[in-house]
Length: 391
Image (cartoon, helix red, strand yellow):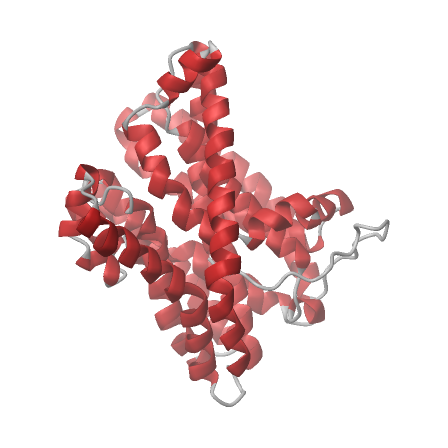
């Protein structure tokens, strides 16, 4: 996930937000902060509500819907691919291309990532033993090497790295950050677009092959080669957006992509109904379809109807976008314990309703995650971000 500085927002004082043009893409686009905010809210809803054990029919429906919040990771991938590729394309011919990119990524990502590893897996266990963390402490080398996704795929269970299992997506992004600058530097324009589409198709084929081979679901979901489609499709969009009338081209693709996505999703429902054994393959296809839908959403956020742009430029969405990295890192480090020990049952007894208890716990957990993330950003991360000015 990437975070950029927050300027003032057009549209907050009665000014109509204007459609984003190719030249404006090279500057900060406030709506993209809101897209990032939506992605983290989806993840929070999924972990704080969608992962809770339901006890009523209404709760089962609520959990079924909010569990789709896990697709927020797909949205993060599309947005990261768009932003990172744009940065790389704009600086491709400038001096110190590699040094500046990698150092700015290091300053944004490493301090928080390695800080929470040091605190949670070295310092805390030295003074306070947490049984749930023992397995993660034993296998912490995978986390330090940004390889959590490979270990989870091998183990086939999220519980292989308790408390830190959500770091799998940070590993995927880091692998992308490491290789993609080389690809962008070697390719340009049309070649880069072709490479992006080839990689996207390859990622889908890799996941399909694993599904056919009955590889465990978690490996299909987290392994880097199969997760590159969202990142490179976002990159493809960044290249197109910088071309003459590129945003017009992207807008024209919205209806056909959206309707095709709806058709494929309906088809997978029918296929699963008549051929239940195809469930794993259909799940892979759906994941790619949702990724395509997020490409549509990103296009609408950049240059869609005013109401959509206003939503993504709102203070609330921009706020969550600004602190999204910290929110992602911190939320499940305590959210894990809420789920593992089913604390919702305790809250339910306090408020007299299990459903209300779910909502109260989710609200409290979100507020706590926001508090930690804001403090972390302003008291810790911000000092490293100031050094980006040197690169």
